[in-house]
Length: 458
Ligand code: AMP
Image 1 (cartoon, helix red, strand yellow):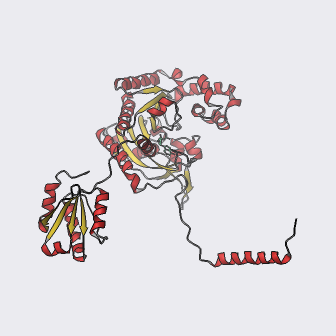
Image 2: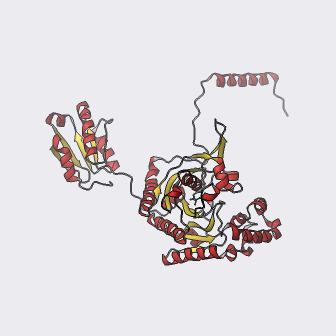
């Protein structure tokens, strides 16, 4: 190797030192912030999809008698420990929990059912006529490994019925969601199972543990732990070693007590009568401890048909012991949660025709300072008259403003220039045909009411 002369080495050292000095002296550019990993902004361009889903879901809630409820995003961590279960993935691995400034252990909610049961007890809703039916829509947080369809901050909306143990409630919730998904342009089918009550599940758990204990060496590390802590979840495992084993595993339906069996049969009969397509899935267990009896998950039909592995669009079940576990009186209940992010992905994939958010009825274009001043009152008058109105108040040229009106799909443009201000008139331009007419300024609201009787996209 040829050695570099000493002088050259020295020069390099000086250069590096100078560079470092310069970097230190230069005013540092402010860091550009990003959303946290697994979290997303919902930008205006996306909003029509959100509006579509939320609006439809809220209409279903109103029609089926579910009342809106909103609970805080922060709750005591212990609520989910108790309700969802300390051994579940959600609680043991995925909670955003921390100690607050007051030393309390709190967390960002990972789901809403526990909060709703807490609210039901806290506000004495067991004294209301039963059942009490709730609808919610909000953000949830789980520290999962981000991947397609799996975020750390995501939304869920859901329907919960507390205070009634009748099987018709389970069927009604499944029926409602099936129809809602159809109205969103999604063909789905539902997978159903019963995981029994704590009594019959105990004997089943023993059988399951015996079965898997013999196969222990084939299980993944996680399932080896589950064998002790949460054996039902082994049936859910997608690992190559674990999944084929479930074929030979005992099935819970064979171990249901009479009450659980009858309940399940009745749910299925209601679904048959309502012509809801469902598949019995003996391996469906759901990941949360509070479930009893019926459990179900919704999948898009094309994923079912092609056998593609897909994330559920929504899921739920009965949770007859949750209210009691949280300190309330025994209260049977059933509910479902759906993920709008996953629904929107499917809606886009299926090219569902989603209406635009709002198309303005009127675009007000102005020219000159006088006209601009006169526009404020006019905008408010037209808004009060019930029109969707937008404007180009910050813009100068008429051509530019009409281009914007066109882009927004406005039905009419009103043009207020210097001449019109002097004359006490205003121009109405039909944006579709391009025809224009001059109207007395004072008559404009009346005139627009004649033209737009039903309004557009109201
Ligand atoms: P779960 O309570 O886990 O059954 O979730 C119910 C529904 O919420 C799922 O079927 C998804 O649509 C949605 N969901 C759950 N976890 C996530 C997540 N990490 N990211 C996006 N959506 C989710």
